[in-house]
Length: 315
Length: 244
Image (tube, rainbow over all chains, first blue to last red; front, side, top):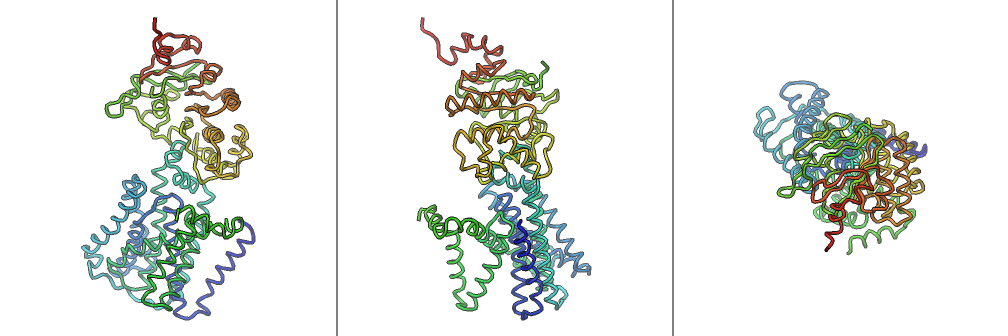
């Protein structure tokens, strides 16, 4: 990474960290939401973007993280950080117990199996009295949006640094090899089962932490919203929009799409969903490898880049 | 010459089909063993059984004296068994250099832990097989003959003790075949044992110390190259029975 880029990243982080000083309450709340979504996109990036396993089960990690904080704080009266750790432990245990069987599946089958995981978790949690069953849990309110904002930003920075480390570590190389050709990776000495499960767990850690912060911030959680599948779809769209398997792609994707969706819902209100859909479809058709790839290739191919992608789709 | 690899009464069935039937042979340290046989004789299955892509239905395989037949493929790779694939399997989106670096990072003895060092080693292997100038290209952009060379470089970067070459010369022209033969000779000089599956008889003749012939999954001959090639049963398997 060039010194220019490092400088740019530091300036961007400083500007983001200082936002609560000059931003309004609405901007800070929008910021928390966006930062948490970016963390989710980065979490998905590890298993989906680097290991190449398109997980629809990350919302299960999110729910476990939320409930970890909820149960620890409401039922056991423990402080928030302990709840976060509890949530992470739940997510890691879940990743190991279910990752080993589920990660044997590939492609569509893996997607379907993980999709089921989140649904099953929602059903299980709504029958556990410790988790408040269908009614959910009400957390003690903490009216400090600036704190939540800085926490979310810190988490996003850690997630991004982790992914940066992945791109230059043996572990990350193993994951990329698995994505590119799993059998070829095994034959060259990559312990594919272990690596996939570790990637799933690492992805789960960040997703659970984001879920924990969100639960404490919103101060309410129920099975429906904690294990919401559409959240999983969102993180995939954001990661893919920005560029899966890149360090900054998912962050850029999350920021860009959150902004688009925010503008649309304030400008065209009730048909915002429609326009958001158009943006996503256009992005998939014109830049299927995400913004990161556009930035890389636009200099050489120019506008022709989009035409090439159109042709590749045979439209 | 002591055996580094011993295949002992190995059988592999696919449902009703017996692809490899009670085959036994050894490869000595620093030896080049040729394996020939008509299409469908079970040659590729045999290589897959040795490197762990498949596991045998019966029989056992020993590497440096200990049984490896039940070990997963990645463990065998780390013990020092490298293979090339007949149907090339690069990591398509990675650069040619990084394709080979994966071998250096993971291969024999769990490889190199630092990426920069692994890339250095990978570049040395690329130069060795004559792909140095393609290092920065994406693997999927390479043409057929260069993909074959890439397969070799990937396997070599693992620093194997035994190299299993599954038709590394198929589809190459005569000049390219001579180049690969030269490369394989150099590899052997470094003390690596090689198993070559090949249809190009000229290459087999000039390379192998010993020859094993498979036919419908059975081993029908095993011995010094020239003797095996003049064996009447081998000629019959390849060319059919001479009408008298």
